[in-house]
Image: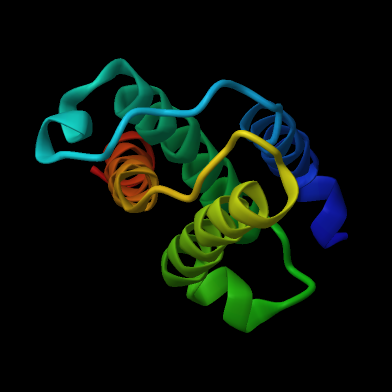
Length: 124
């Protein structure tokens, strides 16, 4: 039952995984200005959608009542850990890709934006 309500979350997570693990040229060094780059914006948008979809899926399922009750916290934790896992995989598996702390920050900011959008759409 939980997979039924999180089908789009799983598809979106697979799309994120596929696009972020593609080989590419080496990225320039990380600085504070990278937080406002297009790459950081794209990371934040992808993870905002992921977190939003995950919260919706968790709140609609009835198999795990605790997961339904703590949907926002669980989706923030899972999405953030997913972003960290992607960075680790980029560093270890993909030639030409590096792990960047600013990507993790952008992913986490995107998750928080996804939570805000969820609350704006469904609660407020």
